[in-house]
Every structure is written in structure tokens, then in C-alpha cells.
Length: 140
Image 1 (cartoon, rainbow, N blue to C red):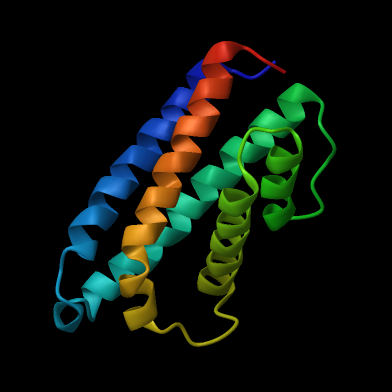
Image 2 (cartoon, rainbow, N blue to C red):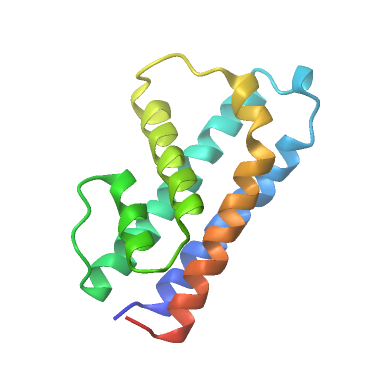
């Protein structure tokens, strides 16, 4: 069964990261450089990881199919009706960005990361609302 307390704690962490990202998103692109860009990268990475952790907790607790990888965790949530398809697609993209940031597969364009923060913040909010609703309902 999904542990609402655990999900709530993870969502509180995510809310903190979203708040910090919101502050960075308000900066002019020219000011989003150096340490601020590295802070943005880190906050995107940990925000993605919290979402992945929540997804995997819900999946394992509910007995849904085991995801093939981090990206697939959001597909499983989509299949279970927890999140809509468009949000699932954007969350899969976030998991891919997390992998690039963690493993430094390729150069990261901080300008693009900064410009995508507003939409990303909306996605994190939508994800948070969907999983909180499921966790509080006790539905499997």
C-alpha cells in the first residue's frame, strides 16, 4: 500500500526545490550563469529524482508492473491512470534530462534549461497534485 506519509515528505522536498527553481526562473537569462546555472542543474536533477522516487514507491506499493528504467516509471503511472499522457511524456523527458545531468552524457545548454523552467515548474506542480491525490485516496 502507498505510504501517504512518505509521499507527503517527498512532495515537501519537491515543493522546496520548486520554490528555489522558481526564484532562478525569474532571473534574466544573462544573470542565469555560473553558480546559478549549476544550482539550476542540481535542482532540476534532484526534482527529477524525487519524482522518480515517488513514482517507483507508488508502483511497487500498488503491485503495478516493474518499470524498465526511470523514464518508464512515468509510463507505468500513465497506464495506471495516475497522470495524463502529455504529462507522462514531459516527465519522461525530465528523467532523460536528469540522466544527462548526472552522467554528463553531453554538454548542457544552460540557456535552454533556464528558458524551460517555467513549463517545468508547471509540470512538477501537476505531477505533485496527481500523486498527492492518489496517495491520500488510498487507491491501489
